[in-house]
Amino acid sequence: MENWLFFALGGVFSGILAGILGIGGGFIIVSLMVALGYPAIQAVATSSLVIIISSTTGSFYNWRMGYLDLQRVVYLAIPAIITAPLGAYLAELIPEYVLLTIFSCFLLVNVYLIRLRQKIVAQAQHSEQTLNPTLSRIATGGIAGLLAGLLGIGGGMIMVPLQMLLLNEEIKVAVRTSLGVIVTATISSSIIHAVQGNVLFIPGLILGIGGILGTQVGTRVLPNLPNSLVSKIFSLFLLIMAVFNFWQAWKSYSSR
Image 1 (spheres, helix red, strand yellow):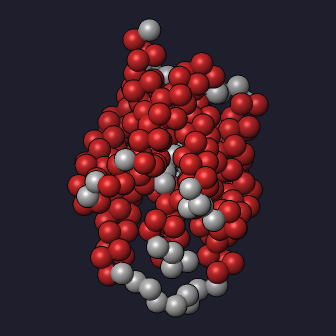
Image 2 (cartoon, one colour; image 1 turned 90 degrees about the vertical axis):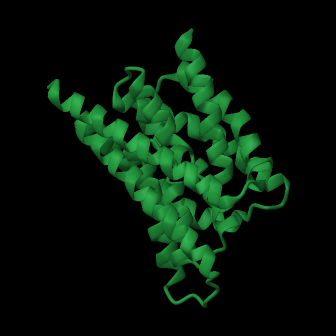
């Protein structure tokens, strides 16, 4: 019963981040489940199910309010759908301590990406597109899909800055597009994880219900908060989670 409460609260928090930043919140779910003693591969797989639920809710709200450009979503979703199963397959082959180490490194990279995103916004870049749009979309969607399957995350932390860097999208457009692409990418990877028997459906549903509630908060209320405050809190949380998962990786390696 105690775990259920942690699952519900973790789902709400991940949903809030999904609505604010256009991410799936998977790193929260994976870290939470690992902390509760679940194997990393089950945490990654169950996270994919939760992300489908929370991201679908946020994307539906954005679509209903006229904020979601479905054409942009489709362009990025196609490569993401192709690469997500590959990531899920690789996750099954990688030792747990290696998977957790990759996950921790990715969290640290995200701290840099957040700062990079802030710099782009501050400079208000509106220059003309110089890179090939098709190749840029393939790269953005493909990388996001691979990470969705491999690490149990939506890939939004990569998609948002890459859309801004490669496709010259404004941040709000990038966030909303990212959330839509996350739905398709995680469905693809979640199917592979489910076939392999790694998805825990009851914890996933509890986390998902919490994610639905959190996403509503994230998409409707928290965007009104100062971006600088949200980014600082989020960066601090990423650093804490990275240290925690490095520690879990060391414990897993030592117990071999």
